Amino acid sequence: MTDQTLSGGISLNDTRRSYAALVQRRRLYGGITVLIFILLMVGGFNIADERNAGGFWNGLGQLGDFPEGVISEAWEKRGQLSGHMVTYFGALLETINIAAVSTLVGAVAGIILSLLSTRGLAYWPRLTPLFRRIMDVMRAVPEIVIALVLIFILGGGPVPAMIAIAFHTAGALGKLFSEVAENADLKPVEGLESVGVNWAQRMLLGVMPQVAPNYLSYALLRFEINIRASAILGFVGAGGIGYELKNAMTWGQGRFDEAAAIFLMLFGTIVLFDQISSHYRNRLTKGDQA
Image (tube, rainbow, N blue to C red; front, side):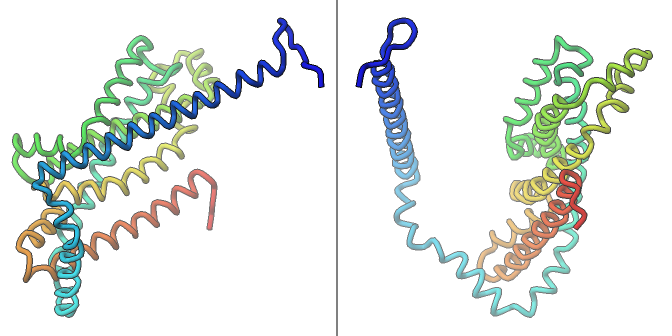
C-alpha cells in the first residue's frame, strides 16, 4: 500500500505514528500521576497513623464494638424507645427549624449574589468577578469552622448554627443560581429596560419567572443538606438533636438506648424530607404530576 501524503507534505503514516506516540505519552503521564497520588495517600496515612500512636490498625478489630453495644442495649430497652423519641422531639424540631431558617436566609442572599455576579444581568458589571470571589470564599469555609468561631463569640445555641449554615448556603446556592440565570432569555429584560424599568424590577419581572422553578428546586435540595449539617453542628454545642446525640453517646453504656432513638428519629426525618423534596423537585423541573 502506498504511503498517502497529506497537505503540507506530511504522510498519513507519520501522522498516525505521531498520534500513537502522543497517546502513549499521555498514558505514561497519567500512570505516573496516579502512582504519585497513591504514594502520597499511603505516606499521608502512615504519618497520620504514627501521630495517632498507631491506633488505626490496633483498633480495626474493635470497629464493630460501638454499634454492637448501641444495638444490643437498644434492643434490651426497646420498650423505652418511643418515650425517648417523645422526649427528644423538641430537639428534632429545633434542628429542622435551624435548617429551614438558614436555607431561607441563604437562598435570599444567594439570589442577590447570583444576580450581581451574572454576566448580562449584573447591576455593576465591573464588580462581577468580586461577587464571584465572595461566593467562592463563602463556599470554601466549612460550616463547622464558622460555627466554632460564632460559638466562641455568641455562646452555644441555635443562632451560631443558623448563621454558619446560612453563610455557606448563600455561597453554594449563589453559584448554582448564577449558572441558571446565565441561561435566561435576555429579551424580556431588554424590553423592560427600553420602557424605563429599574434594575430590581427587571430582575423580578424579566428574570425570576424564568428561573424560579430551578431556584426552588436547588433550594429544596439544599434544605435536605442543611438538616444533616444542623445535626452535625449540634456536636460542637450548636443545639438541636445533634447536641442531645452527643450527650447520649458521651455518657456511653446506660444511655445507648437514647442514642439509638435519636439515630432513628434523625434517619427518619432525613428520609422523609428527602422524599418530599425529591417529589416537588421532580414536579418543578420535569413537570411530573405523579
